[in-house]
Image (cartoon, rainbow over all chains, first blue to last red; front, side, top):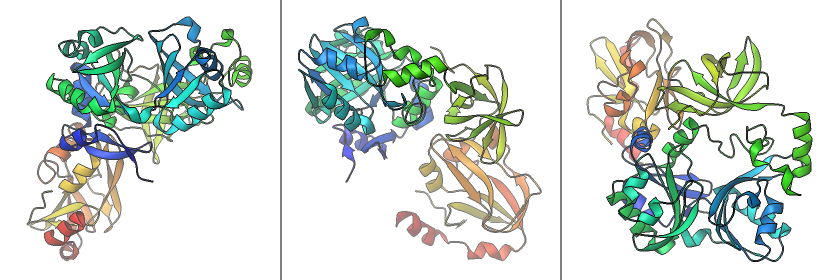
Length: 356
Length: 126
């Protein structure tokens, strides 16, 4: 089966993007500027990412709220319409995180659930089996999703759409952007201020062009990954996934036991009582060498963890990593990362590695 | 992709430049483009003995790690220390300031067994 293409595919190719397969999609890894320049542009100015590979599952109707409350770990009753919430879908067998998801609560009985690309079908299946009195529809193909991120994101977006630029952190609102009816959320995955917007597929190219013309440079998934790593944000398949629980990933706050029953509650409660067997920590290398997923971490010769994501931090100028570590390890501990048979000296640190 | 006429090439995308009795080695324009932004170069030690085709270092980009293979057998006489703090030179100038090391070859004629520019060009364009 060939990879799916974003509504912005032609725009990326025309801009000289290097297109790569990602989660069943063909997406831009970087443009002619390169990953490091795109990373730094997001830290200092504003960039736009095409994140259309994220799924959108629309859940509507009188039973929508109840269905989502029973499916996911976080408590939507703590927010309300016009808000976005980060949440997890658990495997009931062991409380592993089947997917991490953003829910946009766009109207009283209207939700846009956004899973990771490769998990959309799992999330759809979980919602269809456990829901009642609501419609569940995969509308991924109908829209593009564009993330505008960086300290200058709102300033550069404002001339195009004052409404979009004004959407607050974890708020959601409808806004006209360059002639398109967009749904805009104050969310992102870079550690910077900014918004993400869903726009109709047939108007996406025009919106993208308007953003670029407003000084918001395209950035690829390569920079998105180094940015999220520097910000200490988990990526499914690395810091979350089969065998890894919310609590191990340091995200116990996403699991709200006080809201009533939900998928995976029992297994998550068992782990909560017992305490996590390992915890996610940061590692900062002493030089530029990037640690990589799967590298063992040792302290005084004993194995104390494994790297889940690693790369070069453009802001720190050093290798950085997230690692699942023994609970007794602490920030400041000196460790050695086994990079293909050679020790890379590093220090345990609490993420994020970069704060805006 | 730029493939200079005065160099010889390996199928692993190293180039070799004969300079008197020595052979200067680096990675090709094609290799640096495929790697993306280089962030770390693991250089060999001066004095290291290399067998032809053996790995002698690594180039790491934001997306992947790539081994370096010795195009000829010999002894490392010089390494490009500037790459330690400025690995981006491999992207900016792969045939110039991005050179990796100089080898004193056991048998200079091994360079003649490497790919000529035309053959290498058809390899990367094929």
